Image (cartoon, rainbow, N blue to C red):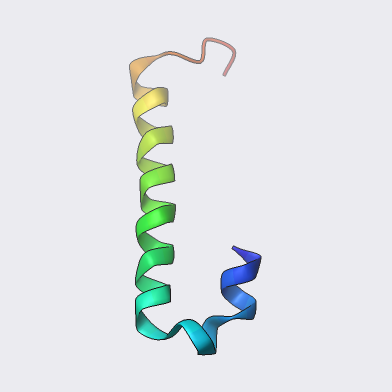
Length: 42
């Protein structure tokens, strides 16, 4: 996320939207894994 924060003005709206899509995919994967019970150590 740091490179996005540094280049925020150059990226514009498309860069911000892409950042939220990427973070949303990561969060969705984490929620799926947690709900599926795969990480038994948590």
